[in-house]
Structure formats: structure tokens, C-alpha cells
Image 1 (cartoon, rainbow, N blue to C red):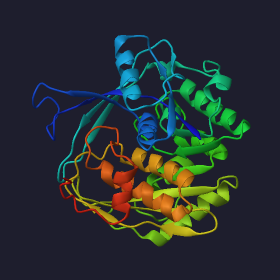
Image 2 (image 1 turned 90 degrees about the vertical axis):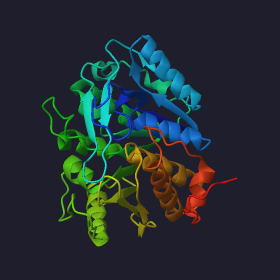
Image 3 (image 1 turned 120 degrees about the vertical axis):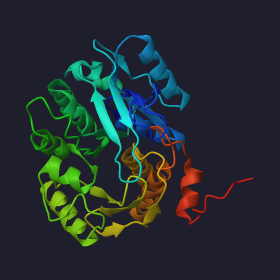
Image 4 (image 1 turned 30 degrees about the vertical axis):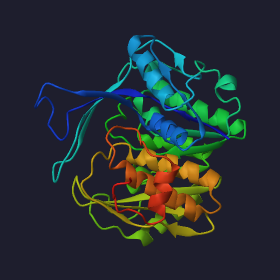
Amino acid sequence: MKYLSFGEIMLRLKAPGVERFFQTPLLEATFGGGEANVAVSLSNYGCDAAFLTVLPKNALADHCIGELRRFGVDTDRIISGPGRMGIYFLEGGANQLPSKVIYDRAGSAIAEAKPGNINWDEALASIGWFHITGITPAISETAMALSLESVREAKQRGITVSCDLNFRKNLWQYGKAAPEVMTELAKYVDVAIANEEDVQKCLGITTDVAVEHGELDREKYKVLSDQVLAQYPDMKLIAITLRESKSADSNGWAACLNDRNAFIESKHYQISDIVDRVGGGDSFSAGLIYGLTHYDTHQQALEFAVAASCLKHSISGDFNRVDVSDVEKLMGGDGSGRVLR
């Protein structure tokens, strides 16, 4: 199977370590973005993964494409368009000081793109799985229309569609509220991925799940996932990540999945001394996509996704630089971190 993810990739500028912005006059320059992160992970797992976006014609975009190719991602579907490359600035958190993200992506090439700019016959040729997030429709009105066009085109071709709802309150600035868009997009989704805030803020489906306290009542997530599946009868399943934020350095991590036949929960991980949690949700999405297409049961798929995402918390940068053997070793119970010689 060939996988395609669609969205924006940005220049990532991060203060070194856990320094605050310009504590020293340095910023680490890498690339990242939710959908690109998924493509990189899938390629690292040995999958035939492609990434679709719109980039300007300049040296920065060339380096970005080169970085994706270094991970084995198929970049042939990337198109050029007017605009710039988006940027996001990251300040790493520690202890009780949270991480901070500042977006600078207005006027980016994909934000300027509109329906009709992408030839979907070419973009979706030979694709079996299409992945998108709720980030792309949030960046501009034209990108929203392009996102809706993409899932409609995928469904018309019988392609499985997954969507990480990914609510980003700082991006919805062009006059539409997230539910106005995401409730329509969700009609075309086979596999939904979210946390509790995403469900409430993107789909307008609420329950008394608290977003910001540390302990999570999993039974309430069954109710929440049942509500989503009832509202979207064509959706095959929804996976919800369960993060218990004790501090910026210490999180509990697990997930649950509702496939209409059963409500299942994953193993719980206690993650301490977090290196970088940005991209953690994307690594879960990629792990779930891999698991659903490579394992016999949804329980195994969920365990792979949670273990993969657990490992991402120990890796700096947006990309999850692990392979299947790394993930399966943790799935099997080896989380000692002992030196391998």
C-alpha cells in the first residue's frame, strides 16, 4: 500500500535546550509539521510514504524537500506556488514552565493555494491511504476549501482517509470557527484521531471530561467516542490519546480506541525527563496507521501507536527517528533504556 499525507511543512526555529527565546542568540533550524511528521514515521517503518504540500521556489524549500528525501519520503507530488515557507518558533518547557509555540505562517504557499491548484488524479494515483489533519483547514480560507476538496477526492476514489483533528486555537483566524469546517470534513473520515480537546473544540461534541487536570477517567472516553461514532455513521473508528500532564517533564501516556465493536485501552506509560513532546501526536497517528495496516488486531495497532509516541518524547525535533524494531521492543516490555552493545 502507498500512503499519502497532505499539509504544511514549516521551518522550525527552536531555542537551544530549555533556554528561553534569545537567552543566547541562537535558534536551531530544522523542519517539521504534523502531516510531514507522519510521512517520515511511515517511511521509517518501511512503508511507501509520500508527502503532498505546496512550497515556494527557493533554496529553503529545496533544503526542506532534500530533508524529506533523506528519510525516504516520496516528494514527487509536492508542487510549487506563490508565497513563502511558514515558520514556527519553539521554546522548550521544563518542570512547571510549559513549552511555547509561536506561528509565523500567514501568506505561506499552502495558505495561498486554493481548490483547482492540485491535480488530484496525479496526486492520488496509486494511493491506498490518505492522511490529513485539522491544522491545514485552519491556516486560511482557501486552504480550508482545498482540504475539503482533498478528502472528497480521496473518498471518491475509495481511498481510506484518516484525520488527526488537531485543534489549534491560534490558527482559526479567518472568520470561521473550527466546528463549522471540521464537522463537514469529518463526514469523509474513516479513521479519526484526537484528544479530548480536539473532539470538543473541532466537532462540538462535549462531555464532562476535563482537559487540563492530571487524572483521566477512561470510562468517560467511551461515552465521548460513542457520541462521535453516532454522529458520523460512516466513520469506522476513533482513537483518543490520553495524556496526563504532571509537568512539562513528566506525562502519563496511553490511548483508547472505539471501533464500534469494542472499546479498547492501551498500556499506560509514565514518561519522565521529556526531551521534546512536539510531534508526539503525529507519531501516534503514524503508529496507528502502520498498526492498522500491518497487525491482525486493533489492540496490537493501538499498542504500536502508543509505544511509538512514547519513544518520540525522548527524541528532539519534529520527526520520530525510530523504526519498527524499536517500537516492538517497547511493546514487548523492554523499556529499560539500557545501552545496547
